[in-house]
Image 1: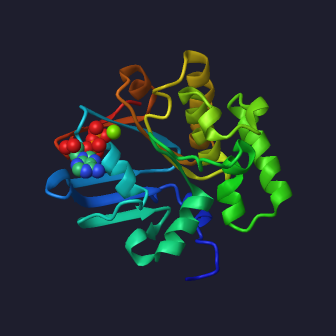
Image 2: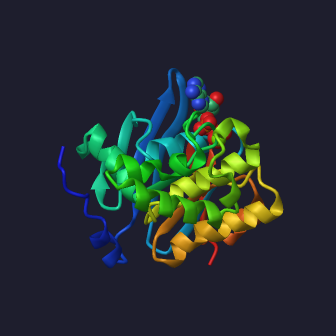
Length: 239
Ligand SMILES: Nc1ncnc2c1ncn2[C@@H]1O[C@H](COP(=O)(O)OP(=O)(O)O)[C@@H](O)[C@H]1O
Ligand SMILES: [Mg+2]
């Protein structure tokens, strides 16, 4: 494994270079096909909604794009890095430093108070405790959880846990965020907070891939990629 930080800022400097490039992605869960040759490119400063019926492959696409599941065929490039060319440790490092991931379930470490749970990507990456906790406090305050830093995940409501997952995904100020229904269990005020933060990534020249079944939220994105039966049914420019 290379000790060097994967060099992603170069990618941002070249607007034509996509932050996400998925080509021919195919994945089956056992014998259940979930993705059947998905192509998707997402450029800097772009928010893409991934929509589709339940079971159409949205979550599988997000997990494969994040490098959390291996594709059976096809390739994933994030911020110019071909995931197949990185080892597990390098993929984990790229995620911790530059790819925020918000999953639907169980992303927080059960016994860790939120302050450290949200700081974890920084701590695992070798950041000192003080600065990591400062960044975590700022991220928690950003999602309205400043008073919950001592809570462990079991003490949180579903909505609070989702906000904490957003805080953790953003704590390292990533260029790319991959989010699976990140506001599905939030009230309107919490959803507005979380969405503003996610769109902040786009405003800073990064990219957001947002899985959602909410048409209003999808319409706020720059593009909508609709999946059906594991394939791209349409890829619409909404700007
Ligand atoms: N862990 C799993 N084991 C077996 N089948 C799965 C698993 N996860 C998803 N699937 C199947 O893969 C297909 C796509 O699922 P998923 O990606 O979760 O869709 P979506 O997020 O759009 O609802 C579905 O047929 C689903 O039943
Ligand atoms: Mg899903």
